Each structure stands twice: as C-alpha cells, then as structure tokens.
Image 1 (cartoon, rainbow, N blue to C red):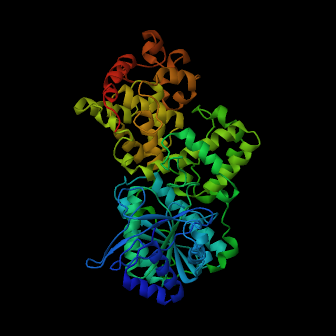
Image 2 (image 1 turned 120 degrees about the horizontal axis):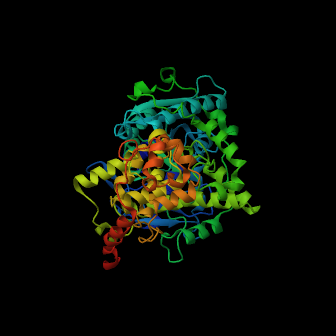
Length: 592
C-alpha cells in the first residue's frame, strides 16, 4: 500500500487527538525496521491490505526538516530508497499492531472519489465508513486534467452525469436529505485538502490510482494533508491484483501475458473477490454543511459544452453500468464467437464504466469466473480480457517508462515518417480518409461516438504504424483524446502491441492486411455501410477495396474515387515492404 507522510508537527497534531499508545507502538516498529537513523522522523501508516494474508509494502519517506518538504517514494518508479515487505512471517509480533492501524476509529473522514464513482462495493467508501463516525464524500473536477481537454468532451459529460447519480445514491443510502456528494472545481490535491480541513476531518480515504500524473497528484495531496495533520489512506479498488502482487519465480514483474494469466488464475480465490457492503455502515454518512449543499455543477460552469452523449444513448453511472451488464450477461456465453465482429452486438460496452469505476471489477470477475468454471467458452474469453486489463496496469506500475517510450528500448531506434508528408498521412488517418474502408469506418466510429471496437483498434492502429509508417505515439495521443474509455495503461499497451514495441506484442513482421481483415470481420459490409454511407450501394465484392471496382460499377453506385471517397493513400504491398526495412534496425540492436 502507499505510504503516508507526516512531519513531526503533523504527527503531534493528529495522534494527540487519537491514541498515544499506538503512536508509541508504531515508533517502536519503525525502530525494529532499523531503516532510519536518529535524525530522521518517519511515520508508517496504511500498510495493511484488507486481506491479511497478503504482504504489504511500507514505503518509507525521508522528511527534509530544513525545507519542510516531503519526498514520497513510490515502489516501481525508480526513486525509492527503502522498501520493506512486511508480513506476519518476516516481522514477528507486529501483525496485531499493523492490523490495529486499519481498525482505528476517527471522528470525521472524507472519501475522495476519483475512478470509483459508485457506492456499490466501493473499497474506499467502505473503509471510511468502517473507520469513521462521520463520513463526507468529495469529488474534485481537477483543473490540472480538465484544462488539457477539448471543450466538448464526452468523458467530462459522462463523469458529470455519473456524479448526479452518485449524489442521489449517497442520499438514498444514508436516508438523510442533506447527504450527498460535495463537488469542487480546482486543483485536485488543493481542493481535497481544503475540503478536509473545512469539514474538520482527520483522515481522507481514496482508491489507488496508477497513472504517473495521478501518482504525482497523490504525492502533492499527501504533503498538503500532512501539513494540516490529516491522514491519507489509499486502498486497492480498480484491479484484482496490482503492482508487484504477482511476480515470476525470480521475483520480477511479468512481461508476457500467458504466464501472467496463469499466475493470476492460480492466485484467484473467493477472498480476492470479497465485496464490500456499505449498506450496514451507511449510518455514518453525514449530512453536508448547508453551505456545501448544492447540486453537481453544470458543464457550462465547468467551462465545457454539451456533447452527443445523450443522443448516443450511452448509459451513465452505476445504473447505466448495471443495465449494460444485465444485457451482456445474456450473451456472455457467446462472447468468444461474437467479439471480433464490429457489426455484431458482442462486447459488453462496459469500458467507460470500468474506466470511471461505475461498476465493480470484483463483481465482473466473479461472474465471469463462475461461468468459466461451469464451462462457458464465452465467459472464459471475457475473463481473459479482464486479466489483460490487470496485466497492463501492472506493466505501467512496474515499467513506468512505457508512458513515454517503448517497452523494448531497441524499438525507439526506428525511423518513422516525418515532415509534411507524415502530417498529411496522419491527418488522413485521423479523418478516416485513407481509402481503406474498414480503417476509415473505424475512425468514423471513433470520431462520431468516442468508441471503437477492439478488433478495429488493432486494425486501425496497425495501419497507422505499419502501412503509413507513423510513430505509434501519434496514434496513442489521438486515441487518448477521443476514446470515452481512454485508460493510459490499456491504450499504451494496445499501441505498443500493434507497433511490436511492447511486452508480449505481435512480431514486427506480422502486418495486418486491411482488406483481408475487412473481408474476414465485416464480410457483409454492414459496419462499413453504416459509417461510410457514400459506399453503401457498392456490391459487397468490391466494398472492401473500392479501387478494384470498374469505372462503370463505381459510377452506377454514385462513387467517384478522389471525390466522393478517397483513393488509397498508400499501396499495402509497397508499405509492407517499407515496414520490414524500417523495422530491420531492431534486429541489429541487442536488447539491453
């Protein structure tokens, strides 16, 4: 678990109001670690996972008294000085002390909602309700994130609508008319610290977040809260196994999916999927101060404009997630047969709900696992997709360099297309004007809806990188802006997969043929016709490659290449040959 930082004054403020005896025990425990010299003051809290059989990580923080600043050390990010794995077998006699820390009672606590916009099986909310007499719920529209987004962004609208639902759910759960969400707008770490102080809280609870920007935000939040004498406890919520919970026999993180999946399944048990029922504890939900009883701010108040989210009928909040999962449950057993065809209702469409935590990953996995044990091939494949999600999360946590470079360093040596020619090709790809119908239809779906079918993400991604010779990071950035369900770990993992630079990626010489992919996965052209209506009248035989149609057929169908529909921007055969030359450099560089 993440460490908690306090300076000497903050320790005194906080613990004086609580239990001096536990402070003495913690100090004694730190002494037995023998990791800190006498001139350092270190506090260790939040070490124990709800499942006592798991080891926890104590991340010790060096307090610079002169500057009054805090350097929070994160495991797996190359800047930790001391990390000790703590469990009952290695540090005898202290399991009770560590467990006691998690059972400590606070008078007032705050739950900082981030990627967990639900009350059902919410670990942070459950932990707060279990540990505090009064609990307030806060969400911050973080300007450090919002300022970089387009003014029309479906994700912001999705969050806003989901918060309205969460606000109602909290009120219903508490049975108190004044309860609900306290929505703030500003820098996340500043607003949560300000809110906690104004509410008289001694502790803030939140779910772990694994992206570099989120880690940096939480470091700032810890510091800001510590200066106020307020604890900060984070808990695992959005994955089944995180960070270094699953390691190879040599003690290193997994870089290949299949062994990771096998270890994941071997480790899975009922305890991993234990849900957190907040209803029996809901009496601790407090009514908001009168000054904070206002509805969730509008898009206009946040500086955003309405999108086509409602027109697309994308269900939001926990209710929307429940609706989607209910319909997917009836077709889950056929997922293995339907998942690759974009015109078929095969996927769960829960990606955006997983992204913003309006659904519990534990409940999804539990359902898929049980169906798998009963022999469902569809559920088995879907469970594997959920494991891929965990896999990419742990890749980002253990190899944070992937956020800005190739997982395989030798692939950074590839010389991509540059200059005006590259910009024109990229623009054509972004706008769905490449002349390859399946690629163009996929991009039209993304641009119009914020969604792209997973098979098409692979096809469109491969085309950009291996047909157009464009740096995969350009595509990664574009998807990051457009996808409703954008998640750094999965998006990065997917792009590094198609570019062959990532962990367990496709071989560089495997290059998708956009025409054969179209003929295989949209054989009747239903998907292409939906998103490229200008090609709708073409016979299916030539729909996948319009340039192969005769002039007479094109004219009869109202298609003029270069006018109503673009000619191919590249020849796939020629592009394939260039790609093999381009990637030859990786064979000359031995991996470090």
